[in-house]
Length: 175
Image (cartoon, rainbow, N blue to C red):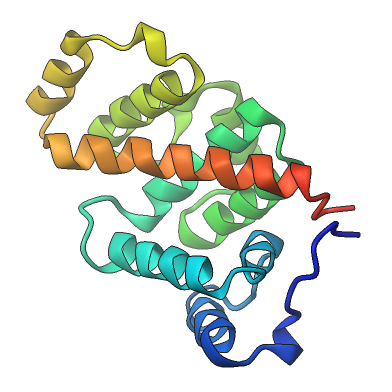
């Protein structure tokens, strides 16, 4: 049981209801990490605005973003988010249990474009061991067709997953 009092979807009002309605319309559910943020309606509104940005304005696909969230969840042992993002990938891409297993064994098996796989590897590196990033990483990603804005936004998604996962564990959301 969560250490925080969160707003259940059936009890949502105001900003929380608006955010839940948006997320439910997009994903067909209100995941526990979103419910966790309901304790702060203004931050929840900011989170939904960020989701809307990534969906409507970013050059990064929703399936690519789910790959980022999956691998950061794995690195940080966020079981709930691992399972959630695996299911999202099965729904968005042509993944089945076998191809998910192949993906988890080797990121090169991702059902993504080659340039997306390269950016995914960089995000994993940047989030898990930021001291190891180099100018050559950015140069190579630029050569593959990514802008600095794209690269920053991809890393930002990984960092958001990291912070949400830490909070999720700290507040015992899945217990």
